[in-house]
Length: 193
Image (cartoon, rainbow, N blue to C red):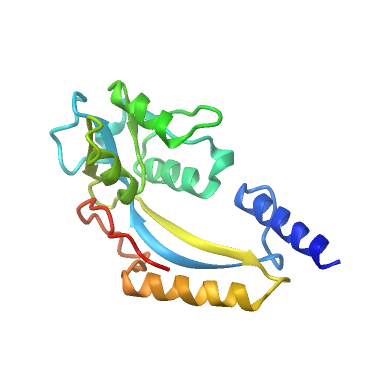
């Protein structure tokens, strides 16, 4: 019976992460990291020499985003930032998007990516022909949370949570949500859990 409960809990977590299930009572969550998003463009893009880049500068650009169903909160946060600035973004998504496919499309120079700073700086520093630029205030800040099944607590889950909390604290990953940061998009040092 425990195996069935664990399988059901895992299936519920997948549904919550996809935005198809209300997590109330099924899943517990805790924020682990606040991270600004950056603009990721080809070195040939018209905005490559601009830093920081305002959302208004992206008004006529095509944004390359993951499909909403893969990361609803991520997608909605980006769209909301544009709408709060009075802009209606032009978004292109594609099915089954591995990050490498997104980076290859950005290298072609016609689209703009808005990844978290850690991914953007890593991609830009990998000799990819891409450049990561800060987003001008107020910016877009992502919240990364850890989720676990509320009804299946275990010693292993508790040890993992303690380790994740310690890692977030040691790396100063939590920042006040009311004070978005536009710190330079530097890749964080690898953290050990």
